[in-house]
Length: 342
Ligand code: ATP
Ligand code: LTN
Image 1: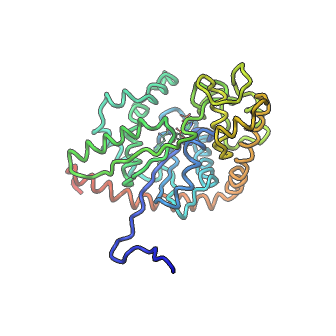
Image 2: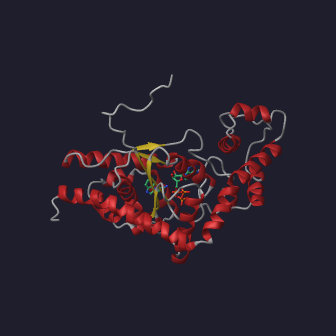
Image 3: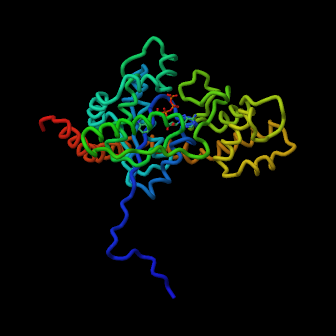
């Protein structure tokens, strides 16, 4: 007998939840960005309505060379598509093309406290790193990020663990606004992967892998050649033991095990077993080879897309149009509640 698995006629189909995330076009995308965030964005398209943005307005909170920023923005967009984001399924756009982001950010700035922004770890880290340019944009960066998220009625924000604090602030801003003006914004949740949420630097495994690190050996860029990837893993800092086991204090090995597990799907136990009695040299080579192999289709698709700038332009223009249509409705609602004459 065939089972009737369709929903009863009276029940409305459940509305898909909404996902929003962004990445800055500051330099090259790293393995950290990929495993912590971007890699998870493609598969989410099947179950959710997704919007993904290249957040170039966030990028200018630290000085950028205009020519490089322009090139990096196109490259970041192409990489997004190469990583599996399908512009027909998701809204994929460049932040500065959609004016509502800056407009809502201003409003939210007026509902965000100085004390809250002062507590942001990213602000403290970046102002220490760029002591000659602690600008107001760097300080209010999280209000723009809150605007990005809140404009789309977002349920979930897939990010690495370092962004959790910013999402908590976005939640607080949304709740504060809702409390003052009645329900307006959906309160978003962070969506952080169990594995890969914080990939560490290869040269100092107590620090996060970051694309703005001056030492290129500290990170693997998604577009690095196979040889470069293997070389970087060979040089990765580990410890003076020779045991491939996941254990507290073995930061370098723990990081390599997380990376290897993320790209092969093997559990830590399986990895420990595979490298039982073998040295770090073998293990590092295996990690490098597996990562290079895993990234090969991304590199190839990226090269293909960069040869078709007209297609990229058509995609980001189309993405911006869709993003504007949705976000303008939210901005109008906010302006009305504030008492702005419409
Ligand atoms: P920068 O070095 O310029 O500050 P970044 O490398 O931190 O940049 P972002 O554009 O700020 O990159 O981050 C994009 C996404 O990648 C975010 O969701 C962030 O949480 C995630 N991410 C960044 N670095 C890592 C990492 N080392 N491990 C896991 N996820 C990461
Ligand atoms: N702040 C994030 C990038 C970012 C973002 C967003 C992430 C800007 N706006 C909205 C998620 C949702 C970062 O530095 N990684």
